Image (cartoon, one colour):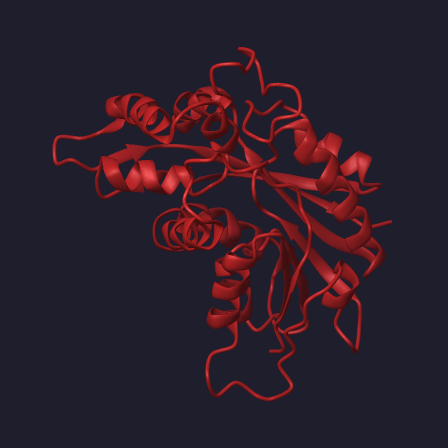
Length: 288
């Protein structure tokens, strides 16, 4: 395995408020919460897609928005050669620690630069993943450009996996995520220019594939329940996703956390744990 992880500018949230902690401290705390609490929630999605595609030796996989690298680590454990790109340097540093521990061969490459720097040296990619659910239009536009670029670095007919929320009525977390729209967001979606969350449309993944010039080739659904040890962990985990950044820019963090805790209350069980059943959907598309 020769993992390659590079920093790539995908869409992310806007400016800090004056009362926010310094970026490095805030970024480290959020990365820790993401890696320790939230990232594992999508493992069933990763595994279902990998099983369907037969990920293993011979797979050259590029993960767009790889975060702190859990999905890449699972693919590497199957024998795949993995590369990853992400805009969050703090998450990317953790991915490097996970995928290139002490004692790894010297030929393991970790570079910083554009998407092209992630390409394997010996052969093009044959699998591209973009697991994190499609959000607002601004995110979709940036992801479209990244998918188009990734397709240009891949073999013809390569699999591209897109992840998204399932039907609203089967996703308990959807009601909680409405807090992410903030006080100025319209009932059906994000405020103009925001990078928060909106409910998924039935054909979001197909539309994204079409915009990126990809050919749909099957889809599936998988249960991805969100479970937390307690209410505080649930709040921290959900805030680490970045989906609440627009709300945090419009209101004090205390207020957002309070509203989030209130929205989570119906899902808190007698033992204090929080449990929200969800169904996620994935689309497999092919490069042309």
